[in-house]
Image 1 (cartoon, rainbow, N blue to C red):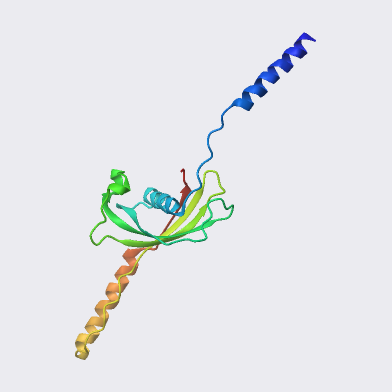
Image 2 (cartoon, rainbow, N blue to C red; image 1 turned 180 degrees about the vertical axis):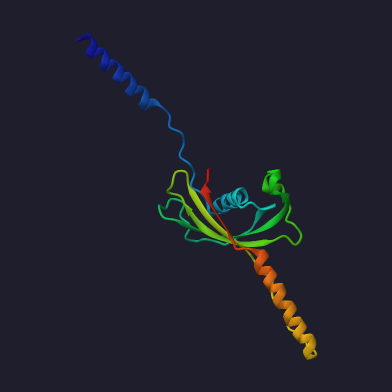
Length: 171
């Protein structure tokens, strides 16, 4: 009988201690701007690039719902910075690189996962085509066409495809 009453006392003490335990505050909902910044950090960690990238522009997402159980869409633009990826400096300290590669990125953020998961795909933005010039002799025209084809072929070979990264994100 004595053992049974001790059990109930211990159970009562444990219950009281659990009831008075302060729970850590719930995480703040993740804003779209913060989600885009975290996606850029994820890209810099996983993409295996020579230089880091910084957020250039985040497309407004009026339907962003930080408390949603469904995937949330991301659309943003990044640009190459002067910082080497191996330096691991905060990207905010890095200036945009003159003539640095600009990439359009899109993806999804899965906020319901614990920890949240992001999948991002980024592709380099192509330069605007040059305006057409006045007609030249047929030989110059043929040579220029061949040169343009070779140049385009090299771009395809060495440009590569867009880079897709994914991973968990801690915020």
